[in-house]
Length: 449
Image 1 (cartoon, one colour):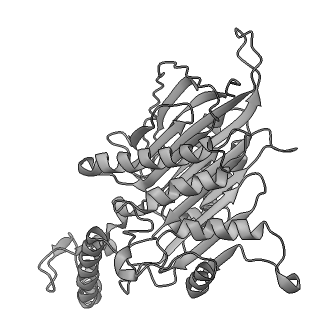
Image 2: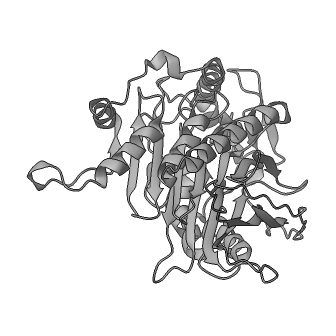
C-alpha cells in the first residue's frame, strides 16, 4: 500500500445561538510502500461508535478496532467476499463488552437486549437486516445470511425472500437457518447491567418529580427573578424555574455519553467490490420493539459499486442517535455526495447541510451522529513508474458531530492496523460542530510469483 496523504480537519459550524470561528488543520503522514508477492489486496475501515470515548477506556476501544480490522483482512487475504470480510469485522466488534452491539448491548425498558444490524453488498446491491432481535449473539451474522439467501432467488411457490426481519420472526428465521441461539443471560455484561441500573434509577427519580413540575409550572408566572427549586423526591435540583417560563432540567440518561456507539465497517476487496455493515444495541432504556437506523435501508449503511452513473465505488456506515440518522437517511446521502470530485469537501457539506442543517431535524437542539466512508476507483500506475500494474485508489474518511469517534483502518498489505480516537476541539459544541479526518492510499495488485 502507498499511503499518499492523511487529511485531518475540523469544521466548527455556527451554533444556533452564536457565531463560532471555523478551524481547519491539514497534516501529512509519511509515505510508505509495501508489496508482498502473491498477497491479495484490500482495505477495511471500522468504527466503534460516535459518542463519547473516555480516556480510561481508550485502549480497549482501539484494541477492539484493531482486532476487527485484522479479522477482515484475514478474510480478504483468503479470497473471501467483501461481505464476508465486513461481517467478520462486525462480529469482532459485537463480541466486545465495551461496544453497544451484540454482547453487552444497552438494555431496554424491560431490561432486555434487542439488537439491530444490516449489511449491503455493493456488487449485487442486495441488503439484509434484522431489527429488535433477541437471543442471537451476533445479529450481523443473521443480516448477512438474509443477504446471501436473498441472492439465491425466489422461494417455493414464487415467494420473494425476506431482506429485513424483526423480533421473534427474525429469531425463528435465524435458528431455522442454523444460527445458534444465545441465552439472554449471556448477552448482558456487568457493564451493561450496571448502566441499566443507573439509568433506571434516573428514570424513577425523573418520574417522581413530575408532580413537583406541575406545581412549579403554576408558580412560574409569579417568579420574577427565577430560582432553582429543590426536588422533594431526591434532594437534587431537577428543574430550573425562571422568569417567562424557565428551563426544565431533568436527569439525562447515558445516551449522551458512550452509549450511542453503534459499530460498523466498510470494506473494498481486490476486485474493487465494496461492502458495508452496521450493528447496534440501540438507545438505553428504549421502548421494547424500537428499531433504529442500524436496521433501516439507506440509514445505517450503504454500499454501491462503480457503474454507468457512478464513477466511484462507495461504502458508508453510520453511528449516533438512530432517530436523527433515520430522518436524514444519512448513509445514502453520503454515498451520493461522494460521487463528486472532492470527497473531503463533499462529506463535510453533507454533514453540514443534510445532517446538522437538515430541515427534518430543525427542532432538535443537537444533532448527534457520525459516519465512516470509503470510495475507490481503478487508476493507472504512478507517472514515474515504468510498470503498468492495475492500481486501486482508496479514499477513506470519518466524520462526527459527537464528542468523539473511534476508528481503525488497515490494508491487506499492512503489517498491522492503525487506530485513532477523533475528538471535537476544545470549545466545539457536540451536536452543532463537525469533525472530519481521513486519508488516501493506493492498493497495487500483487506481483505474480
